[in-house]
Length: 64
Image (cartoon, rainbow, N blue to C red; front, side, top):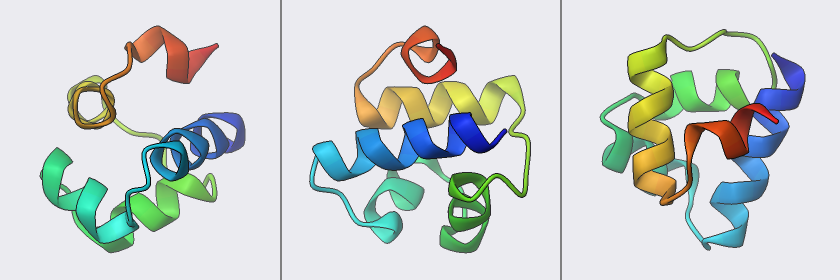
């Protein structure tokens, strides 16, 4: 989970998005996104799909 969170954070920062912006685009709360980025939560496939779509990356890129 921690690796996934780091990849989400890196992709978000690469796109120049704040946590609030990514959370809004992925239809999740900023707090939940923050917890994902530090590895405290394991997202559902649906949530991961929304995050990947908002970041314009493939889910596989986040899971590698």
